[in-house]
Image 1 (cartoon, rainbow, N blue to C red):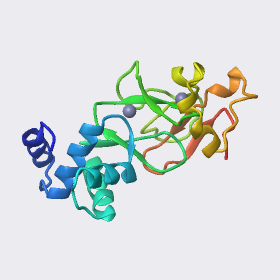
Image 2 (image 1 turned 90 degrees about the vertical axis):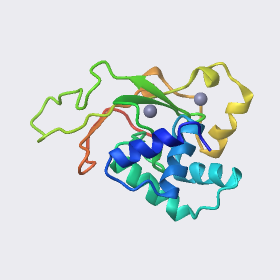
Image 3 (image 1 turned 90 degrees about the horizontal axis):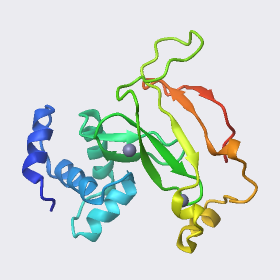
Length: 185
Ligand SMILES: [Zn+2]
Ligand SMILES: [Zn+2]
């Protein structure tokens, strides 16, 4: 399917895994789709493309590929896990109206890139989630406002201070170490 199947086989094998059909299909699908995708979106993409693959196989393949560092889970807060092709450490901006996730470069480029004030323990990861309204939603594009209604989000009544949420988490226990803003339930 993708143009980089040979490269994918090599990368999966270099990670010490067998390049099984589902892993290849899922990794290729994620590259084709681009951006940040849920397992269900990857599954739907494969099914649309004529690949018969059980949903559970997509989940398993994503977990294996993520463990091997070929894919990555984009930490965008609550909701279903969102996967992307692993292109290095970075942060994310989440539009609270259309839910679109965009990459935000990390100035440090390695994790953890933030140091907490207190002695919280061994910090292994610090993920910043920028929240707000994406350029399209700011411009009031009508096709991007449906998600707001579906997600029970009210674009009105927000303040600038609410547009940023910062969380820092360890990768092992996912304990929320810091949150400076409330968030929709
Ligand atoms: Zn948006
Ligand atoms: Zn990303």
